[in-house]
Length: 322
Image (cartoon, rainbow, N blue to C red; front, side):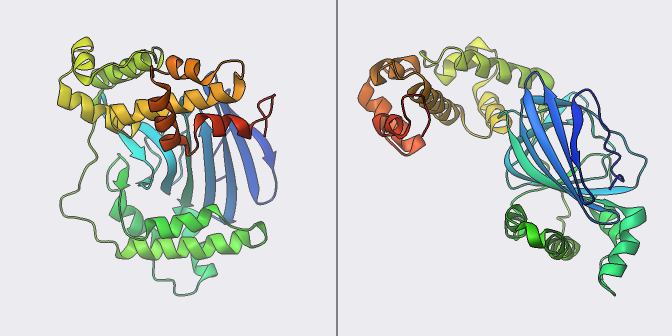
């Protein structure tokens, strides 16, 4: 269970440990996260990662020969892809690496991240795999070399069958958890073995630190001034960044275009006010999130949340509970 060398730190604490499962809590001033790790067989762990935080500082190092496969279910992860540049790991992606560049500062641009990690210790897992299935045709070391020839992670996105394999790993009944993990991981290994990599690797776009910092400052200004609607041309001038690069960078950092992101953010903030500030009427809430027309606000709210503001408010009692 210890092959990942996961240790307690100031930000990471072991909450619980059993024969087959360890639960770690990550916590800092921006929020907290839970990592639930299972040992499937010697040399193979699967971890469920649920983070509700803006960033995390990792001090993780390893002396083991690892092959790790991460799947992002929801949210986004910002990671350093080159000196002074960043890339983004998003919902539906696979990230494969050896955990040799897993130290430093990581950002969660949407303040949440949900996914899982499958990790092989190649010095242990190869022999254990042969015990599990005789004549299993996959060589883990060859698979590691196929996907992790360099130091930087290999990202696979929009690949067929990925969602089929991983979606079922998030809904495993407890009674069959370990044997089911084995079946799905064997399926994943077979899939990766036959997956043909393009001769020219399609790299995720990367963005330099100065550009990313401007985009984050832009978002901060907009969410702190929800009453005001900024045009994209205004934002381009205010933050001294050309319009097209600004749009591209914002979408890659936060996962959606500026206007769409802000519309969803406004409606989620309105939902919080409708639930918790019952003394404020709907018209005033509309104004607080930048709508001077209650009708337009109601239409936008229903499109995002699925109910009208009044219908949404009626769900909750006087204390904001259902």
